[in-house]
Image 1 (cartoon, helix red, strand yellow):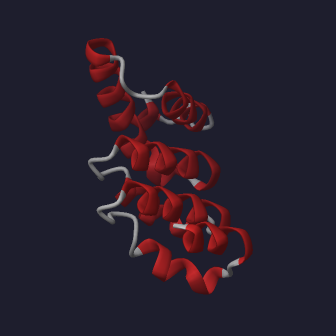
Image 2 (cartoon, rainbow, N blue to C red):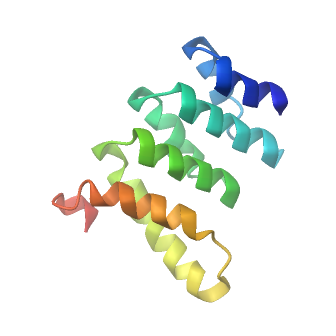
Image 3 (cartoon, rainbow, N blue to C red):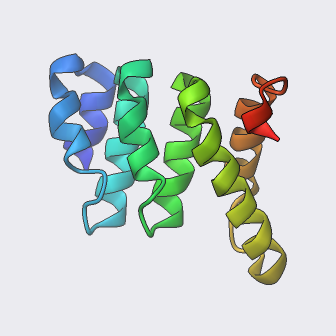
Length: 120
């Protein structure tokens, strides 16, 4: 895990494929660290990796992915972010388990595309 975090701090884009391979790692700390490192190293070209991370079962991985999408996302992410917001809201009221920060990241992202019909 420390190696993954270090790659995010001092790594280069050459580390992106190795980090991307870890986003569905069994260990929570490894996958979350990989997504966080990718958010630091990546750009809009890594958006497909962040969208893939949204499909992980781990709410932690989804939270890191949403923060990365907020930072690097573009209109390609609108549908996935809207779907995630709907899922969070339906579960949030039942269990109140999802961190509000993920929802805030999603809403800030969607605000950039408020005039896009896909964001409604």
